Length: 412
Image 1 (cartoon, one colour):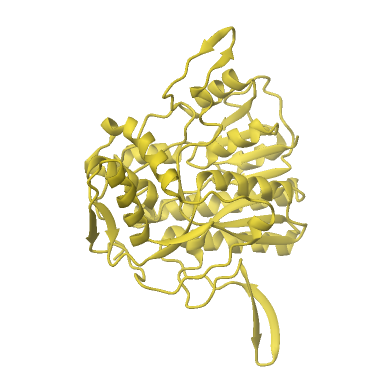
Image 2: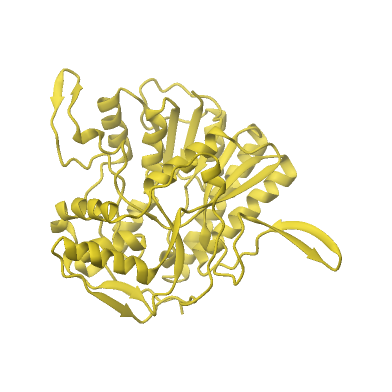
């Protein structure tokens, strides 16, 4: 199978993606510099459970499956580190044979500061966001130009690039007729944070690389993701023969992804579920009419896999809207409240003064059929899915710190 290079392989999406491709026989290399872990430590925000280092995770995965995920620890804002991944003149932080896998057929690009609130804490965190996100993407574009223009890039963008326009949101492109002439343009962008602004700039950088150097890029405009379990993450909790001994059934979380529940790095549904379990009123901002597109973490894995199987053509920037269904903040809170009450929790909803600058009531009708057309089979947000997430969070209830759930980082 082909060589997959995952940038940002330690993150909420990066590590599950690495296991997903490895299980299916791909030669997987992951790169990370622990940005998110270090940021969580610096800002003193909690994780639901401790997570082994990236190298430890790779060793556990190898022990349980016999498959190898090669690890490189490095800062991709350094152009020479990025370029070394295509030239082969780097050292693996962990692998079995330390043999260069060759130029990757596919690069999956998650290596960005992923939080809108983080980008607006103050000017220093805004600068970190701009520097990290734009330098990594630009370094990747030039590495591709100089070493491998045939490599397919799958970049995970965000639906937040579009904002909440008063027209239907197409999948990346819009056909315009103006004064009797027609042309096709990137759909207008209007970000609501500096993080989302960097994602717009990513798209522009990649569109430039496609036009100038005939690169092949798929940009996935992803909505907020929820969930913490995938088929691969639960391998460590199953009975397996491992090096002559039996691995017992467990509540093991060693292969599960990083799970944040704070307002900086936790996504909205993940936060609501943790809040429900510890009796913290669900933090709905303002009127709660903010509507977004959502997807299960397992669908993120499907989407990047289908995109890898059917790569963009040379000289093509292919854009898909990566969501499976839409909800308002009120609708999500009510779903969590209903399921929580069935499980015996007294879940309350609190409408807080909105710390963000955003439309709380708006039109929202995105198109999102492209990935389903490639064969993605959606997981929908059912009561059973919510109950399953709550049952997992219950096991780690003692780890939850109420003081980090909400601090009120303001946009204004």
